[in-house]
Image 1: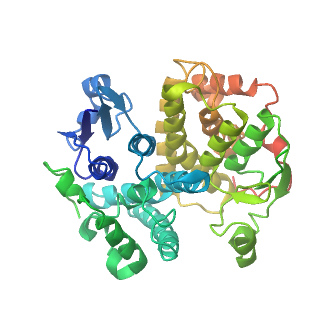
Image 2: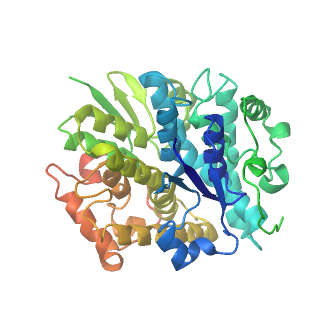
Image 3: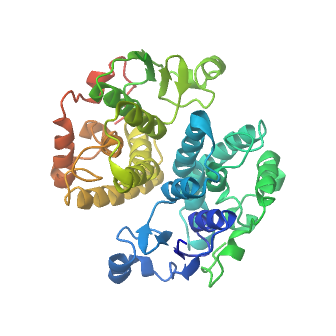
Length: 214
Length: 214
C-alpha cells in the first residue's frame, strides 16, 4: 500500500490534478496545506526540507518527493493502469496533449488567473497578452473536444485531467464564463465531472484561501 | 530504414532540437523549409495538408506526421536507444526537465526572442515580463548544471537537447550574452556542442531567414 502526502494550496490547479487522479484511482492521500500566499515556498527551510525549486505541488510517495505534475500523472497512470491510454498511437496523443497543456493552456491560464484574481495591481498589458493566448488555446480545445468525447479519443486520460485542471475554477476567479462562451469545452468538462468519484478542487483541497483582488 | 521529412523554419529552436536529435542518432532527414514568416502555416491549405494546429516543426516519419517536439524526442530516444536516460529514476528526471523546459525555459525564451528580434514594435511591458521569467529560469539552470555535467546526471539526454534548443542562437537575437552572464550555462552548452556530430541550428537548418527588427 503506497502512502501519499500532497503539499498543495487550494487555488493550485496542478495540485488539483494530482488530488483528482489519486482519488479517481481509488487512492487516499494526506493533504498538506501550504502557506503559498504567505511566501513559505520561498523560505530557505521549505526549500531545504520540501522542494529546492520552490514549486507546488509536491507529492511524497512513500517518503520520496516528486515534482512536475505531468510526469507524476504519467507515473500514476502506469502504476494503476488507469487514464494512460492504450496502444502506441493513443499514448503518443496523451503525451502530446500533456505537453501542449503544460506549455499552453494550463500554463497561461494559471498565470492569467493568478494575476487577475490573486495579485494586487496586475500590469494591464501583461494581463491582456496572457488573456489573448488563453483565448487562442480555448478555441483549439473547443474545436477538438467537439469532434470526440475526450481529448485523446473515446475515453478519458491524464491529458483530460491536466487540461481541465485550471478550467474548473469559478468564473469570477478565471474571468471566463465557459458555459456561455465555449459550449463544447463546457460539455467536455461536464463529461469529466461525471466520472465516478470526481470532485472539484475546493472539495478535494480545502483550507485557508488566498486573498482576492478581483 | 525509416524516412524522415522535417518541416521547419531556420529560427525555430524546436525544429533545431529534432534536427539535432536525428543527426546525433546517425539519421538523415529531408529538410522542408517552410515560409513561416510569410504566413504559410496560417493558410487553410497548409493546415489541411500538413498540420491542422499550424505548429512548426512537423516531423514526417515514413509519411506519418508527428507534432510536439517533446513527445517526438522521447519517441526517437526509445527508437534509437540514445539520450533517453537509463532506469526509472533517471527517466523520470528526463521527463521532468522536458516538461519544465517546454513550459518555462524554451517556452519563454522562444516568445521573448521572437518578439525581440523578429517582430516589429513589440510591447515593451510584455517584453519585460517575458525577460523577467527567462532570467529566473536561466538562474535555475545555472545552479543545476553547475552541480553535474548534464541536467539529468552524468550523460546527455533529450532533456539537455531540449533545454539548449533556444540557447544556442546568437546573442544579438536572444539578447542574452550567456558566456558573460551565465558561465555555468555556457560551459554546459560547450559540453553539448562537443558531442560527436553536433551542429548549430543555422548549419543544420539553412534557408531564407526571417526579417530582423532588433
